[in-house]
Amino acid sequence: MAKEQLAIHGGTPVRTTPLGYGRQFIDEDDIQAVIKVLKSDYLTCGPAIASMERKLCEITGAKYAVAVSNGTAALHLACLAAGIKEGDEVITTPITFAASANCALYCGAKPVFADINPETYNIDPACIKAAITPATKAVVAVDFTGQATELDSILEICKENNLVLIEDAAHSLGTRYKGKGVGSIADMTTFSFHPVKTATGGEGGAITTNDETLYKKLLRLRAHGITRNQDEMCNPSDAGWYYEQTELGFNYRITDFQAALIESQLCKIDRFSQKRKEIVKIYEEAFQDVPELLLQKEIEDSDTTRHLFILRLNSKRLNCTRREFFDALHAENIKVQVHYIPVYYHSHYEKLGYAKGLCPNAEKLYEEIVSIPLFYSMNEQDIRDVITAVNKIVSYYKTK
Ligand SMILES: *Cc1c(COP(=O)(O)O)cnc(C)c1O
Image 1 (tube, rainbow, N blue to C red):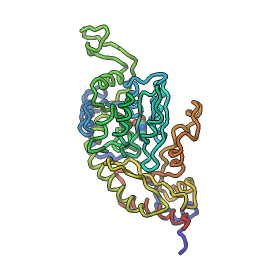
Image 2: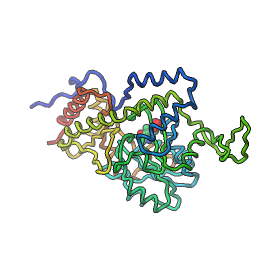
Image 3: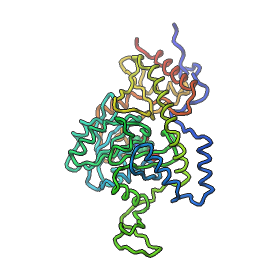
Image 4: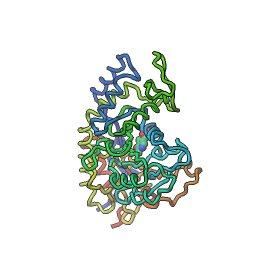
């Protein structure tokens, strides 16, 4: 049988309209929630923020939540609240968005990259252990694609070495680890509400914690380091106008209309999780017996709400590079992405002295992956188109 001509070689694309790898879902409830705030007295510092924080606590099982302007600000504040400063080291994974490492740089600390497990793609606890030095103060563990990291092992390592565990859960809202909600397990957990993530506020982020001291510190750092609580003041006064800046904080506040949008989205988290799980199941059934493709291994302890679905090319059985595979899918109008370029490949990190060769498993993974579309509002035809396009390209390039 003749091979079907790929769109990249002039054939007919599987789709006529482009399908991105992620997209927000906004319904009438979400719009009304925002309008209600826009017509109210408070656009910022109002009641919608605390209300959204309570909702996030309810979903995750965390005691406290602090909403901030974005996920990057959440990571920055978590590092500051952990006491990270110049000369400290923070261990993280290279297979993540740069923000997971940049947060250490913001504090004058040094990000140290620990390699990943080649099957789960998450940071390998043994590699964390090997990377610890007397300067290590914290671990930023990323739940890559939404799958929880091996939290029990990592928590144990952190406890033994007196390290703060910050879990970057930008991908894993809705995921549960051994029955507990992500957000209730690490010392601090950070979330992002960027539109490609599972729930959105346009921009937005949050930190959850069970520790009251960290919580109060995060509240102050979110708003300039200013307190109105006399107990926290160095020069207490009960004068009506008085507030005091006790440390150097930031304006990392979120607006009330973003918080209202996020809360409205959080109310749909079960639907969002369910649909993502359904799509993952369809993809897994379609691709698990395709020897040209390798799938991410799921650990039993993680009940995962997946943010990304990754196809790893089995280079032994495909006559194409990842670049050709990526370009071929784009030509079929399936707009895949690559998650992620190892953080230390970026020229900023090169200038800081990081070089290739640091994390071999991460570097190999990066050469072989694409993320296919996965989002709530995909319809059955979209899902079929992705599978058809992938199979078409695999058939064309397979070696056997
Ligand atoms: C999206 C993301 C962030 C940053 O979140 P923003 O809200 O875009 O600042 C941090 N870490 C990971 C792993 C992410 O995917």
